[in-house]
Every structure is written in structure tokens, then in C-alpha cells.
Length: 354
Image 1 (cartoon, helix red, strand yellow):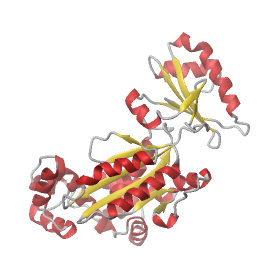
Image 2 (cartoon, rainbow, N blue to C red; image 1 turned 30 degrees about the vertical axis):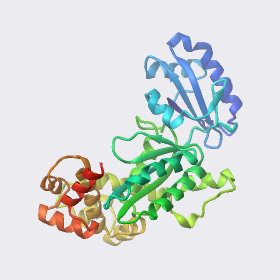
Image 3 (cartoon, helix red, strand yellow; image 1 turned 180 degrees about the vertical axis):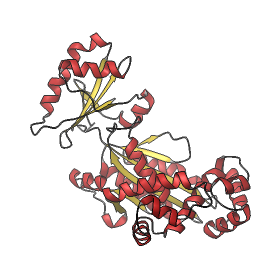
Image 4 (cartoon, rainbow, N blue to C red; image 1 turned 120 degrees about the vertical axis):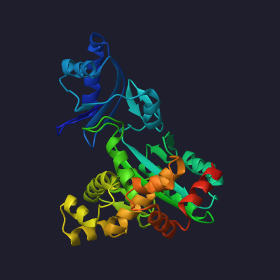
């Protein structure tokens, strides 16, 4: 699958259709088959799905037929593509939604991460999937327990997120969850995977953001407003993250992911790596995450330890040292203060739930 960005004031769907017909006329010379393409007129982007022997052959079809070479080409599997992009139909290979509108190729992706400290969550799993189906979402299979969902319409994604939030808030006992939404392109100008930039956004929102708070990027909110669907969501019910803030969260996420195992890593080191003064770092991080820098570093360590306690099979001591805690005793103390359960009891609880 590839991406083309067009620098022209006169960009039209008709131009793209003509270029596609030119591709079809010569594709056999390169052993390539054009399958489907998506056009986003407003963003002046085109995404082409094709089957071919390699990336070069796919790009040569465009180059020889009309000169519009791709900005980037990635390999995609049928299973992955169908989950993210399979919904909809096509007319002469041009993608449309099931309701007959031009399909831009953009998707809003939801990421949900749940930590259960009581054992009361399990019965709600089917209810979450019912809500997703009701809002026309498609669940993307994940290697961990996270739930990732793709939506054609941003409004469906937002309303689904709000419905899940409302349902989880009603569960008795102590559970925590992180919920994030972001819109993006199937292929970015850099990267090797479907929705790579979009997934970076929602991963950073879930790893760094406040629990029990819905994080939504500004593009998803803008798309929802343009859709003019009657059931619009109230913006006060979620946290809108602007583009500059997103860049900072991704950068912060990359730094912390790399430095968390280092027990000597502190907020002063973070200030230096971000290139901010102490006061700037505090203000920016507090605004995005609700935590002071040192609190955020410890929170990330604890959240990462939760993931490992659920499935790694490592000892408490191994997990403590792996995530930058100076001793298992200290790790157990701060873990219990934060989650009101010891690491050992959490591991037992989760194995029982499983």
C-alpha cells in the first residue's frame, strides 16, 4: 500500500481516476495488480492498494504511467488490511463507504487498556465488544490485552469511547483504564507499518495520560464536527490534545521508554533530554498528564510493571529491577501505595481471573 501527496490547487477525484486508468493499462508489464484506491480531496492524498513482486515494481507502474511516484510504500498482510480498511465498497477500484460516500482512507483508531484489581471486570468484556459493534467499530487483534478498534467515522469512535467510559465507570471495585482516540492515514510519508503515526499517538496517550480520562487528538474532534451527525459528543467529556502537545507526548514517550530501566534516571535528566528548563518541563508535563515529572516517571514504571506482572512470568525482584526500582521492597511499597494491592496479590488475582 502506498501514499501519494499532491501539490496542486486543481486536485480532483477525476484526475486520480484518470491516473488509475493509466496504471491499469501498463500494470501487467511489471507483474502488478491494482486492487483499490482511496482519495482524500481535502488533504490531497491518495492511497493505493496493489499486489506485486516488490515495492520497486509497484512504484514503477506509477512512474511509467503518469509520473506520480509514491512518497512511501509499505507491505501489508491481507488480515491486517481487512481489519483496518476492509469495510466499505469500491466502484472501478475507487473506495467508497457503505453509505455511498467517498472513502478518504483515514481512520480513527481507539485504544483501550484496562487493569483490574478486584476481579469484577471480566463479565464486562462482552459488553465492551457489543458497544464497539453498535458503533460500527472493527477490533484489531493485539499481542497484549489492549483493545484496539478502527472506525471510518470519527463521531462513531468518540461516541463509542464515551459509551465504554460510562460502562467502565459503573463497575464496582477498583479498576483503572486508559482510553485514547486518534485519527490518521493508513500509510505515512515515513514508516513501515499501517497507521504507524496514529498508533504512536494513542500509545503515548495511554502510557502517559491520566487514568479514567478519554484523550482525543484535535484532528478527530475536527473530523467529527465536519461529519454533521446528529449525535455529536460534548467536548467537555474528553481531553483534546493539540498537535504541538502530541509531538511532545510522543517525544516524552520515546524518552521514558528508553530510560525507565535506569534507576538513576530523574526529572533533571528529563529536563535536559527535552531541552526545557525545570519550570517549563513541569508546566508542560503537568498540563498533559496531571502529574509532576518525577511522579510521571514513577507512574510509567508502575504501569509497565503491571503489564509484566500479568504475563511475563518473571519474579517480583526481576520486574522491580527491570523497571528502574532500587529494590523489590521499595517497589512493593510504592506499588501498594499506588494500586492498594501488593504485586504478589495482583499476580495471583490476575491468574485467577484468567
